[in-house]
Length: 137
Image (cartoon, rainbow, N blue to C red):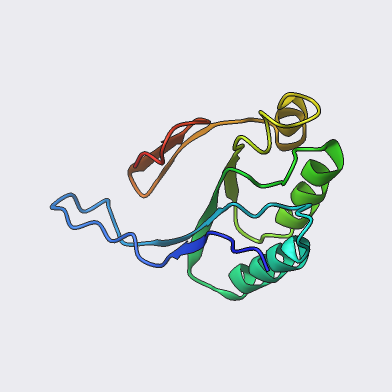
C-alpha cells in the first residue's frame, strides 16, 4: 500500500507574553493522492475525516498539496466531496499532482475549492500559504 504523508499537529502551543495567543490544536494533511492506482486513498481520506470529526478539540484542518493523483476533474470533485464532510473549517492548496499534471492545468482545483492559496488568522496567529510555498505561521 502506498505510504501517505499524514500528519496531525496535536499542539500548536505558543509561549509568549501576549495573552491573546492561546494553545490550540489543528490537523495537517498532505499527499492524500485520491485516485491513486494503488487503491485505498479514498477510504483512507474518509477514515481520516471521520477521525478528525471525532476529536472535539481540533480548531481547523490545513491540507497541503497532492490531494489527487493526477488532478483529474473527477478526482478533485471526489476529494472535495470527502473533505466537505469535515465538521471544522479546512484550508487547502494544490500540489503539482493537482495543478501541474492536471487535465485542466489547475483551473478545476480553483473552481471546485474556490481558491488555490489561503491566508487566515486564528487566535492572533496568521497562517499564509500559496502553492509552492511552505507553511508560514
